[in-house]
Length: 87
Image (cartoon, rainbow, N blue to C red; front, side, top):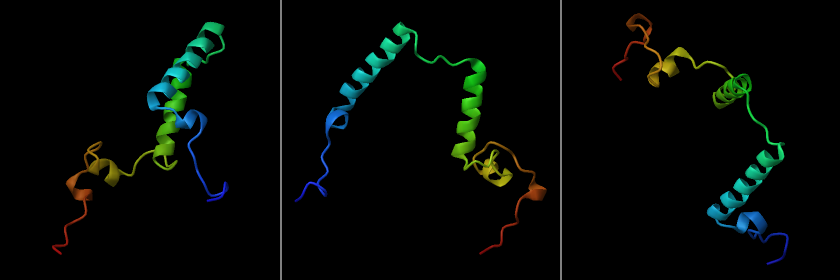
């Protein structure tokens, strides 16, 4: 097997998840101590959450009423529900 086709986990990827978390945690703590860590304002957090919600729905913003109803997020009046076909 040559070097181009062989895939090995090296460096950070070869470590256990626990070891990765430990190292990442140290970096976060160091940034806070140094004063360079980003701290979210409530407005920034709200904007980020809104963007994440849009992305998770394919950028469409709100779910279609039918899909929201299937998820239990919205109740759809009986008059606007499709009639069963009996198939």
